[in-house]
Length: 298
Ligand SMILES: [Zn+2]
Image (cartoon, rainbow, N blue to C red; front, side):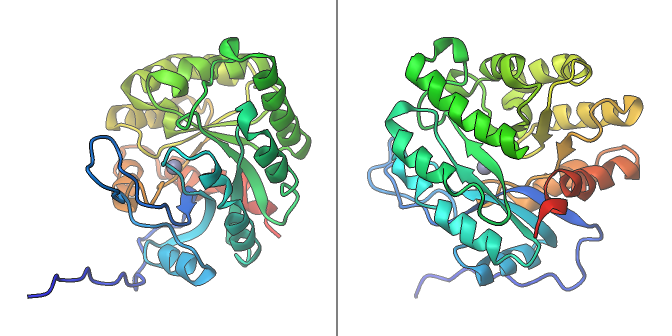
């Protein structure tokens, strides 16, 4: 008996009953890697789309009308995500007004040349964000950066500010990606720089810290944006109810499904199932993303 192959995905025929834009999707393959205690190389997630056709099918199978794409990453090789920047730029250009791109950059001095190369691609059509993550090293806490690291971050931040595009920062609890480091970035640069905190602050502690600061961040004039991918139920409910009740930061929260690492369905229902007004859902599923990203597509 041969191994049963997975059914190929099929485009949705009746849609999902809502207009949905995702501001967080990864494209490109990732080589298998001997993660953690694995005895040999494994691929935990499916590969991201690699061609315009694959990306289009991916979107049609989920009912996503517009998407912001980001290099796939996750293995501990610094060059790897930079290697997908060209793919992001070409898919964004071919995206027929439905695809925006975020280019990978790094504040680590060892990645200076690669980051300079990425900076030179920033004015390609439909590149509307920068992606940074400390999962591959370094820390979000500027108090721990040396002079070179600070200068490299400032170069990236300046390029984003000049173009009025946000930086997507990965957040997860503890270590270099902890939200406490990002609060320091926000304090120093967040009035000029648009800061998109992926995963809503990262985990239980990140969510609680973020929720406790939300009003102060918004009313303090900081340019903080969020997507709800990987966020835990209580935090999304609480934030959405706050938005519904107070309107504070109502333009700052967006839907992202983070495939192929997360899954569209659970990310969708986290918002769709929330007991909030339909107006807030419409903003999160597409309205805020249209204002922030997709209205700028050419
Ligand atoms: Zn992601």
